[in-house]
Image (tube, rainbow, N blue to C red):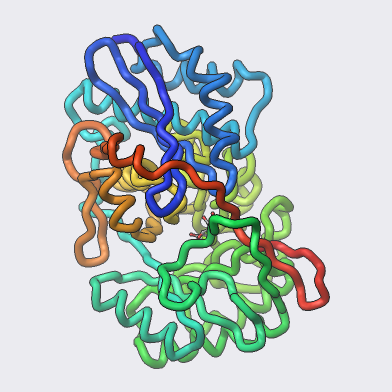
Length: 402
Ligand code: GCO
Ligand code: MG
């Protein structure tokens, strides 16, 4: 089998997506996702200018060699743009491989290690009563695990809280908006949120929380300790993770489990975190980490240190990445949980897929390959629109991590 064509479909059905379609001489094609929120065209250009011409004529079954060719062969390694571009190719090749062998991708990764993939979804509210209602609503829908975010009194536009009545979607089709941030107000408030949730909801539901990189390690240690009575499933991205040893400080102070990695793009970003057991869950997105090939290796490495997976699953990753995460999550032994932030109805229409949700779990389906397609005619009706993530400033105007 040979690759005869590779092209991009950049569309915006409610939000931007960069999709790669690789076609073969046997009529089988595969899809990959190259979406990098707010930087979509950088990945599209990396793919069309630098990668796609090199794919023509290659054997799509050689996922390992093609991955090494694109990673080592470029000389310039890593970084979100490069790795998302490589990830798009790698995932499309696994899709082709599954279709050619007439089997779902998880069978090529070790087969099913479990019946279904435990997922968590997002609850949010402008205040504690609204956040509580939102968690309850998702529990009624069948979710066994829910991430809870709430507006913080005295802090305008807190992370994770939608603008009135709209589903939460951080990228906006305008120049970056600015939100204000106060660590002091946040740290005083969050334990009261989870105290209320536990009292009202009981001990069984898994509760998660995303700090979104906003604290220093010692502040994160304080928060983790304060949250211990409410036994969170995890506290996510407590501090920016460039300094991996920062997590040792957090670990020294709290037993609240830690999840990190949605902005990582290489096993090397997590190497120290994993081998020192400073974290519990690794959240790298399949696309931004360079595809299924490196993520399988990363998961196996993490397994040696009791670190489990919690792959990124926000709406800025397309249904193709969602499917890839479900196949890999079903197969690896050290699966932890999968994020599920459902896409809009329009996005789902553009990307028809086989994966399903039932009673707290998701299932990738048994279609050959990944089980996701793209309706190109419909996609063409929604052209790319420039969009940015917001930025955050402290109350005194200092730019801080969003
Ligand atoms: C999450 C996230 C996201 C990010 C988004 C940025 O845990 O799902 O933190 O919602 O903010 O992916 O593009
Ligand atoms: Mg997050």
